[in-house]
Length: 259
Image (cartoon, rainbow, N blue to C red):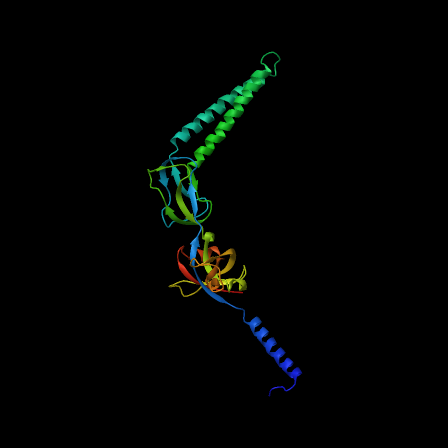
């Protein structure tokens, strides 16, 4: 029955609006977008050059923090380390002798003691540098991860700073999805994301970590009301390390995002 008076119409409209609001609140909006798996790689290198003597890992190796990855030839660094150690031993003995002589007036000058101390301190610094150089020729994993690639073979010359091993820690694996401009306002960091991939029945559960503040167009177009539908924002979804390890960089995915 349709109300005949104006107040009745107002009551009916209020009921309809309240019902719509209630329905929208009880059924949060979910959006479905496409994306791909991205990996942020860690490139392991030595600050010094030299031939690759030992490669402890190969492509696909799972490593833990502290596992050795590779070692360059350390013949030169070992010789420098031995020499620095010998020089410090000698200068330390000379300083001890000068210090004892300084206790007897007239037997040694203050200048001789200062020179001995300076020589000992310089040799100590050289030893620290030699130890650092020696250690730099061998590199270990700083965190657990998958050896994604190795870039040199044993016996090849490696330039200083050139990566030898490419590591992919599981926490560096994420999904990048592209959300239309009309939908980006409905999602927030922390929202749940379900990622599905071909050949896997169960979805991977993650959460929205970051929404890029700048938009981009899928093709090159000019700003207009008609082209606004082509405007997308990139969204990053991350996972716990155990889940992320099951994803592969470059893999296309479907993403469902909702509160």
